[in-house]
Structures are given as C-alpha cells and as structure tokens.
Amino acid sequence: NSTVENILSILLILFLLNFIRNKLREFNSSVLINFEENSNTFKSIIFKVLGFTFLNPHVYSDTIFILGNMSKNFMFSNKISFGIGASLSSFLFFFMIGYLSKYFSKFINKPQIWKFLNIFIIIFMSFIILFVISDMINSNL
Image (tube, rainbow, N blue to C red):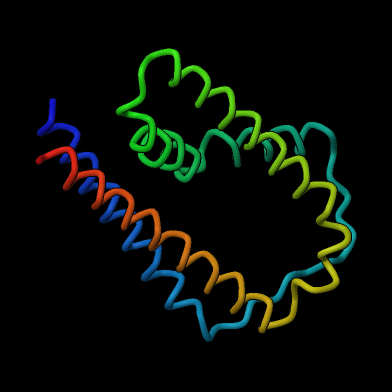
C-alpha cells in the first residue's frame, strides 16, 4: 500500500512540475482573448460544458491526484467531511468565476495580469509539491 501511495505521489509531483514548466514557458507570451459576441445554440453550449467538464484532464488530475493525495491519511468520517467541503468549495469557486467573469474581463487582456496569475499558480503548485514531498517523507519514517 505504501509503495502504491509513493508511486502516486511521485506521479503527482511529476505532473505538477510539468505544469509549472508550462507556466514558466507561458510567462513572457501574451494572451489575447476575443470578446466578440458569439451566437451559440443551447445545444452547442451544453455540449461544450460537458466537453470541458468530462474531457478535461485537469478535472481528473485535480480530483484524484491532488485531493486524493491530501485526504489519503484521513479517517473515513473525515474523508466524507473533506469530500463535502471540497465539493462545496469547487462549486462556489466556479460559480464565482462565472459571475465575476464579466467584471474581470476588462483586465484579462493585460500582460501584467497574466504574469501575476502565472506567478500565483507557480507558487501555489510549488507549495503543493512541498506538501506532497513532506507527506511522503513523514509516511515513510
């Protein structure tokens, strides 16, 4: 069991290091978003939402690797509480992104905003890597 956990932790670390590497590559590139009105049908919107939800590898990597790794040492009752809290937090996060996107859209095409976001993401992912390494060390002692 410990071997499987170590392998999954190492895979998570490799995934996060690759993610950080990609953010570093994007650091000096500019991102431009087209804000033109788009006439989508209800059906096309539903298919896009389902595609972004279930075909997005980050859904599975975040859920299985990151949240699964953080909760692996919890008691069963704590895992249920953790799962409810993680689900509620995820819902609130994406709900707020949807409603605040109109407000933040005026800032999103500025290169300094993307640099700030990339720095924040790199730091956050680095802390997760440190947490996973610390957990691996403590589990193997």
